[in-house]
Length: 165
Image (cartoon, rainbow, N blue to C red; front, side, top):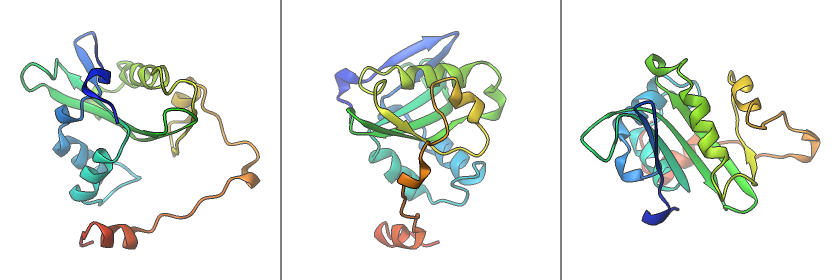
């Protein structure tokens, strides 16, 4: 988790990226992830909130300065990391009406160049954005026979967070 002093606010062409979780518009994030994403369709708001709270760094992208007034949040990403060796990038999106403006590349540059993340072994999963992530050093796993995973168990997660599905 970042301290208040470690949070960043950067701007480009009227758009802003902030790592201050208190500025995030949970409704925008929840609506996109639960209704438009292929990876979390139908997820509950409670689980979206818990995933934000439990993430190391969250990146909100805004059309305007989020520290002044109420600009629209137009994108999001979150990182889970030990800030030394390992990072996992998740829930990356830019709202459709703001795509094709270089915002996702700007976001990825800021994430992968973060002083405590840029050397870490970064992982992610994507169905359709391989060319974007390849520009930032991501590549298919090598020696997949050495990798293992334990499948996601929504029933167990929903029970822990007392979410009806």
